[in-house]
Length: 117
Image (cartoon, rainbow, N blue to C red; front, top):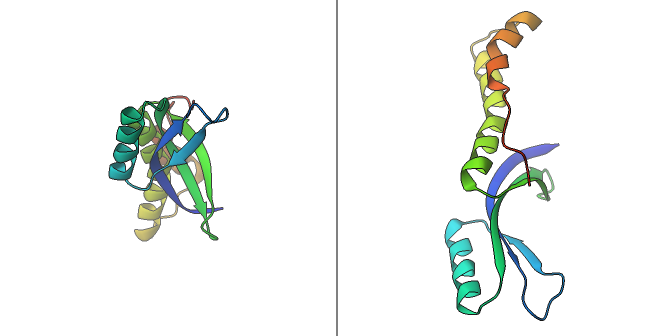
């Protein structure tokens, strides 16, 4: 069970001396941009993308999905958080919803989303 979710920029680097390559997620956009600039300057092939992680109570991160575009990752991230926010808001209002009411209230929030990589 995850206690929080994170959206992070990622670089998959392929230095000439490393067949497997290296994949690194960054906590900040500025760290990611510096790493991209270093790859460009040193001619290290790299692929930039965005990942959504779930973090458990021990602080361990599990990748949930990878997305080529930041806006796709952000759309999924927001959709993942929308349902718990809506349920939390309803409960804070002291509302209990019967199954049919829940379907009507929450159904529009469940939509098709861009596929993961």
